[in-house]
Image (cartoon, rainbow, N blue to C red; front, top):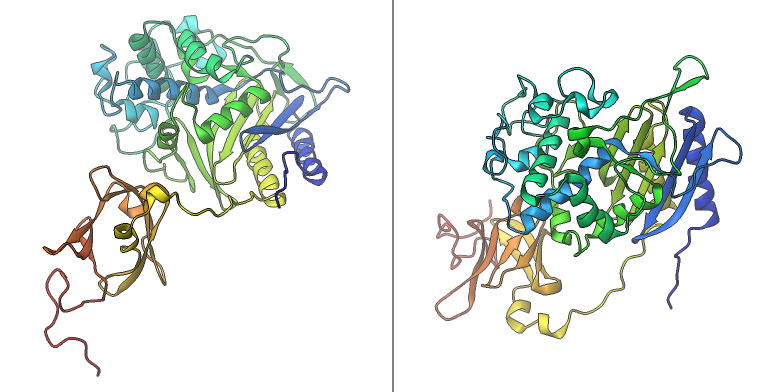
Length: 460
């Protein structure tokens, strides 16, 4: 028996709309728009407005601020995948004369390059880009705040450097590279560098009175890669689906997954938040969210993706402060995940070609010292090694073409697991980064480092 649940339940839709309505009222925002993606498809859109009959639509543009950084990071990862740069390359190798050329591209992506958070005065978000036409104007006389690579320190100028890096290697503007390499392939037709009607106006709402005034919408010039873009709930939902699964036309799934790996220790006080390669990471309500928040005068925005739940949520508002879009987007994910939990994939046997007697012979219990582990075969001849009782280091491994496996997560990420054979071809033990796993705990004939007491096991 199979069932289809493409549409959300009416009770779930009511809960989502209630959350958005509360956010618009309590956040005192002129308007609020939100959407939810499930399994790659937009399944819900909702909005509220202070003007009756003029609620925004899914294609109404809002400014998205630093969500722009994710687009810039994708452009850089494309350069890496094409072999035009390495993430470990110093910036100076590809972009000369910045004065901070020793920082690496990975450090810039993950905000661990130690650069200043902002440009020199005046405040770049409320002044035209013509005020700072060159990188030197963005970086200032003292661009460093911390030693490179030591800690996470968010830097808007760092993403200006990455945008200039894209331009240097592509030979076109950042905006042109963005359009041809991301927006057009993904069908993000309503994501632009400048507003295109219909779009929301940005407002500042008085903190102590229910009055508001328009905020300026500046063209950020060279700072554009850090926060220029305008987009819609519809486009950001599609972009969220891409961040969950990747798209071969833009960036392979493996590279998108790499962007979600923490790139530097979180700053003190950040709690359960972190940063990957262009993506913010947040642990909330028992799930991991990846995406980005954004703000510019007159607008706040957030896109969160829960890969495990197959969900993404977008929240956009046109007020400088007040609406808690990051919290709302997280709540939208939680509401759907709890009301309509993801159905697991049906169990299926492995393909015949992926199983053989030698591989099956390795399954079952193994012992690291006296710690009991179980080895299980998975898809693609991969394996999982996990503790059979208590706590321990669980890890999944991908099969290597030359034999053995490479760790994909946890303590053993990047470490090699291999089966060591005796002269007669039988398996002696498993070697995992020099740790020896044997079929019996301290068997007298086993290759246990340091040997086994000849008297064997004994009682008191």
